[in-house]
Image (cartoon, rainbow, N blue to C red; front, top):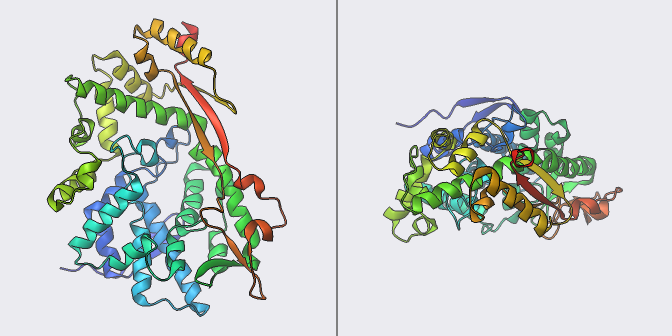
Length: 416
């Protein structure tokens, strides 16, 4: 029995969003997509911004709304987009994040090593396409930039795509960080196509400048907030410890399907298997792995006999996060060794195990990468200028890759 094609979603960011395609409704109602309701958009950011509990599900719905608006604008300006192409590009955006694992980016490569969420998204799309008798073939071509109209792919993935326009405004709304508010509707109204490239008419240049600045600020204030970085790497180390213990034969109780991934019974090989049954089994098991499984499992690990696993688990659950310091230069080996020695004495562990308590690394941020794809401004005379050339403000700082080194450790090792 087919679902009704006359449905409305009430979204707090964009208002009422109409669902008027049978294909899109089938995708949204599929268990693979419904799983996104159980995956937080911002991972562990709610430990800093209490309101940031929104999910990948609503973000995907938001991108669907924006790309539909963009397609309407482009068609009104004389750009030919067939109904099949419109349905395909909307489906591509609906599914662009479907491969995200628990807590989104925070645990990428931790649950399934050697395969990115983009790769997993494509694997999910292929499986859905098999189930839907090829009805997603055009969406997949657009997603992979193999369709002959390049501008459709740019709506899905580019320096100014519908994904970014939604998540900046949505993440700003839920986190309360007003610097992320962008004029998404204004930018969409200024979109056009020139030489098969998505461009922005010159009247929208200031909105694009604001978008780039907002993107930079949101990364430092929300996505790469130092406390969020501390929590994310604590969870990465926590899962690493659990996996090491399981590999050594120790009992590490889990909830749901997490055991299969913790014991590496399911790896990237299963997802890339040419055996369709093996691949589908891996996908199905991944589908029922979400944020709730990890939280429930970590709560149980608080009482695990291993002191490292129990301490990291309790610290995360009770928000006793590691102290974190940032620096423009790497931290010295002597600094790291000193903190590890203190950890050895405080927690009665060996030198190798101290790596679970003293964590160092680097984070990077650049708001605009012209090498990946530029933002072109269209003038009334038909000429194009890249945004850095067209803008009357210096955007060089937004293109530069900024690197910050971080060092995390339990604060109690200094006060013991």
